[in-house]
Length: 132
Image (cartoon, rainbow, N blue to C red; front, side):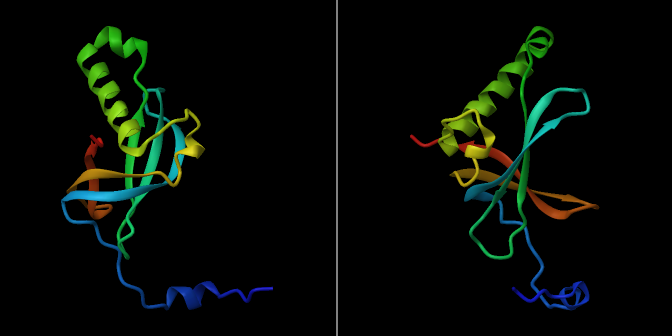
């Protein structure tokens, strides 16, 4: 049986602080996908990406699934949502509707930096890089 480390021992460890990646193009891997319902009751997925670079913060992205109601009330926003999903699917080579099969897929994204009181400096997906 493996020896467990106490929580106070862990809390006293010295480790480097995680940082955001610099703005620009980066290769990332999907590490987590969670089905979510947004505040308006619409379905979507919260997706976490990670970089192979050590000590970097994970990158979160919420992919809302556009509804037919959105199409009828705001066709421009509906079309933009569909286009973004198409870019995500192409960038990561998604071939299944099963989100657990997306985990481990790699692709390229263009990242930008954002700052908030809660999270400090973190990355946001500006766009997905679709292979040619």
